[in-house]
Image 1: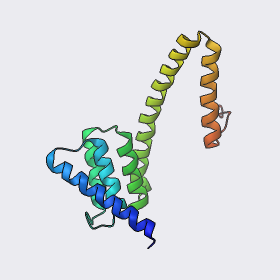
Image 2: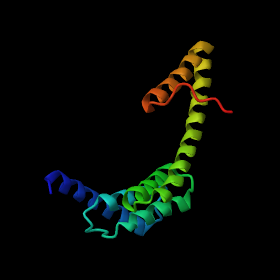
Image 3: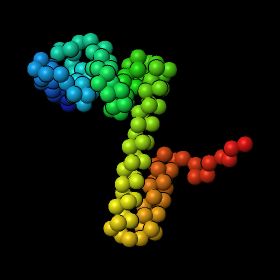
Length: 150
């Protein structure tokens, strides 16, 4: 095992130990639970040896906030990559995407409104919106023309 992998595992173990100490004092937030799960998976196994503890941490985060995208994604990847269950992972990824798209719509509306106030130009706003769409299509190599529905 390379030194950098050992260092990463040691860092993960140290962070996991800190999170466990915090957890003794108070309940963890959803983001702290996500980090706990990540560190369980990244660690050497000396602090927590059962990788399923990661799954429990992600589930605990979702018990607090069922739409917490980081926990949905981490649990999805856990089921897909660790448990080899695309069937279980897919709905988690779908929900994470739906939550993220809703947040993106809200952010886009806010930017649009601010640009209209600051620029007093509908053209600037339209350029911004077109650039977002173009960037998304190019980034993911998505088709620019959607097939027409019958």
